[in-house]
Image (cartoon, rainbow, N blue to C red):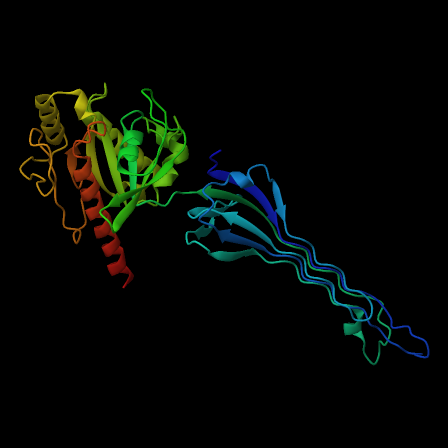
Length: 373
């Protein structure tokens, strides 16, 4: 079962109470106070594990609580510390305060361990309160309470390229063609009900991660369909690939513009991502129709066809349009990096798409490294 969001109540352990005790031993008349301290309550940690890919293990666990500290004992014995609790989450999990909506942690790195809630401190035993004026203290401190938080965990997939498009435009077929992912493929809408990740290999040494999410429809940013629930999975992707169905009853320009609108309405930051366009299902149309629709689409969105993407080998019967961009200059928000007709069934231009996406993924990573310096 795929679960990408859960709400939990999480509590650290209460500290153990200090002990009130007096040393009584044969032949020792004035043993004095010897009550030990209580143990600290257990803490709550988050650990990121690559072997975990969903939050389903946390589903149904309404309250996760660390162990309380044990109380102190006589003879100056300290109480045992409560056992810590670790919550194992997949990379890309965000911890959000359910009451305020504030983001607490963004857990990305494999093996990352962060302290979330510290356990309550144990109380002091009565041996600490002995003084010249009070040689028989009859009180000790109670342990401090633990901390309780209402939180929401959201998993956002970490991928280099995110596929965005209407239902049944060929996203699952494309990711199964380019990568090792094997999603369900069928001739009806909303075949994909859960996001899928696939590794796309380019040559022997290069690869990048591609994410396929359920189809987006008009009003997805308002909660229609499945788009709102899964749009979060492409929030981390640095490059988007918009899939436009050439054989769909929706006009290509309408598909393109409505997808951009939904992205912008969902997240202004997401709408500024660099993106390319792949025109899918070209195998269902003849060559002339594909070229005519491509040129009309480019004209409709205000792009010229004078720059041909010819660095990749493609079927000469088709026109492959591309638009090289200088990554040193801020890109216009609504202008694609490239436009390329493809067919995942016949593998037309899929290799070209593989290499051009890899080029842009590497360029984005180089940009980030430069900014980090």
